[in-house]
Length: 520
Image (tube, rainbow, N blue to C red; front, side):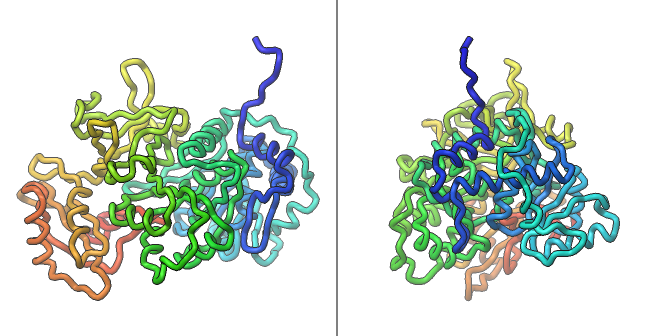
């Protein structure tokens, strides 16, 4: 037994360590505002101490409904200093969804910015939120009901809160995107999030000199990947409050960005910028893309245009991560790679057993980045769990994949999006890949619609390219000449755009609701 006490490397301890040893190094930048690690450590301490002084107790939850800013970052990581759990909410969700999530997580406090404060006031006025909710405002007019963020922290102690943070303690709750079902609260422990930082820093090639661009909302788990990896190595976070492709280029050039995590739609917008070849991307070293399928054209185009390593990541907020390393980029272009060290992956057949080699199956994973479970949803947690014969619990992703002879994973489709037509399993992604090859198709989603003959049949929802107006019947014929007999589509519907969440995932349940009149 060791005579020395070795502290567990949790995120709060790591921030404190950087505050002491990387004191003058920039920790976070937003525009012209810069906090070095010493001040970032002290400011997160103030957040934790102020919340405790306001009556919150370790283990309770603080919700955040705010635009990306240094202040929001301080709340996200200041809560952990006090043993509080933070619940960052997607700012694009409806008021009804905000009320539902706040009720579900039982938040004792809400930190909101700008117009989002009025949204909370409206929910309180109609009795949809508890009256005793502590309200803290970022960049919003002060009112008697709201505590101004800067004033709230003004008298708070800048030293470490007198709380022992446990690795098993709750770090955060992130609500799922709800692409196929209603959102669920995904719970991560402090220990789990520390592993996310450590493992992602290694897999995505972060180092102490990393300057990381956060261009998606700080509520997004894609952004959390970047934040945790950067915090782990003691790099610098650059916050971009609102994304635009032009703004992304300006941030990369101005701050000499080296790393970042992006959704495919962001990279697609980047490639559409004029005179991209004249911009300076020489600082970029490695960027990651995830959140929705990344087409080979965007994959190659981004790598070639930016001249840096592009790492595609497949994973869920719930856990399980694979990456396609740059060394395997060209020979495994359509793959999402292999599990990162510490993660295990397998495919589960429809008979509930592991699928044989070469056969498609549901992707399941086991490892230290797996969530603790779904908040208040034991039935959903059980549904997402497969217990192996040896007793180990694996996460069921709901995604269908194939492993090639070299052990590289290719995503086939989401199990819930799978179409059962005439007794045959049809994966919409296979059809979508073909349709994207048509010159007049900018975007596409395939869903199942009722069929008297087959039970279900594929229908393609197509967004035409600018200036194009393809004839649906001709597009049906073109597609059906290129897919398998059982994959033939029954029709094409033209739309101006597809409903997507902020991470770029197509919300197929919303498409079904629009086209079939089914509840979303």
